[in-house]
Image 1 (cartoon, rainbow, N blue to C red):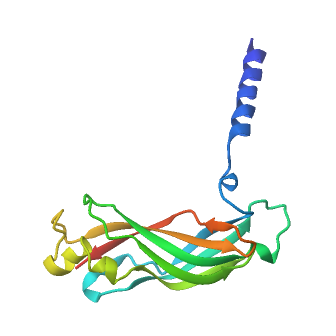
Image 2: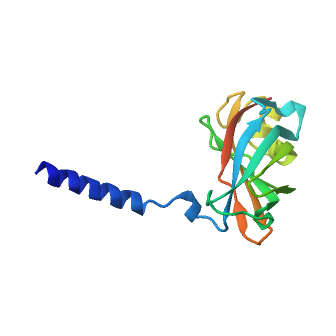
Image 3: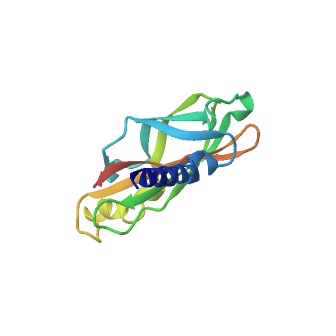
Length: 179
């Protein structure tokens, strides 16, 4: 009986592991674009200082889905744009409008690219509610708080030189916005 249970457990484990689908099966192309590092992240942003607000450095890495396979220059990723979306970490529900900006850089196959001074809040976000409330009223009209805590989520989009569309997974950080 004990042997039958052990064999049954082993069979279930093999089936479960065999049916798992890895991230590499879900995206187009033979490479993955990943945000590997944020440096010089602002923890506090003042709307009174105006925009745009930037991240000091972001490192993007291009790596092969098959680490044992061969790569070529055709797997380099030409960055085209990035998207920034916001969510509230506090009790508020109003959000700044999302942002999409052009971006031109190359992340070589099996290499990295460092982007400096990348905007994550522009005047468009700072001049619209809820952030504009801080500048005009000194507090968020919805919550009454003098601090709006935002999760900032960035995604990067590009295309390999071979023509495959590539998008990074979202990468996030938190910032406090004050008057």
